[in-house]
Amino acid sequence: YLDYVTCGHSLGGNLAIHALLTSPDNMNIVSAYGLDAPGYSDEYLSHYSDEISDKAQKIHHYQWSLVGGLLNKIPGENYGFIETKPEAQSEFFDKHNLFYVEFDSDASVISSDKPDDLLSAEEAIHGITAALDNCDDELKMVLYQIPLVKYIGVCLEFVQFKNNAESVGTAAAT
Image (cartoon, rainbow, N blue to C red):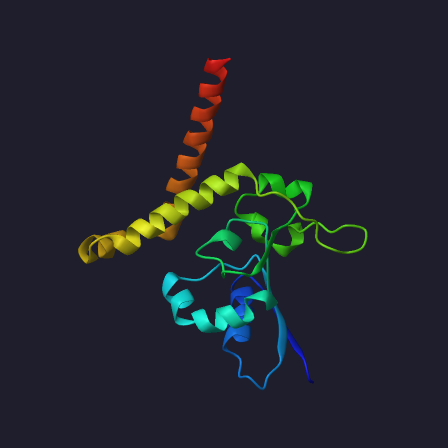
């Protein structure tokens, strides 16, 4: 083949993008698609900054759940948040499943705005992960013993508290 396209879901999407960025010059990867793929660390973005500058326009990142918003997006990538089926609205964690992606009558994904609850959860998780990166090594070792699920649970409790506080504040102001 003369041209290649890489594509994957979740970690596979992350790896599809990585393949594009690290491919040899004689391998013509024309596009990479990350389907709800997590992003990359600051160190990764710094290490591959030249490749990113050269190839970011070939990257297509479609997000529809919390997973696709983890870590950092590739600067300059073609990013889009897409619509999910109505039954996905009650599935915060399971929404990552490809089954929930909504397509139009032409079998294309449907662009959408990112919901506020997802924005809040991403903001909370980014805050926690940034704090972990910057805390001292002894505290970091203790915190790393706690399962990630507990971190996410704390984030979700924060989001729920924030949403409830905003609702109460709005009701009180009217």
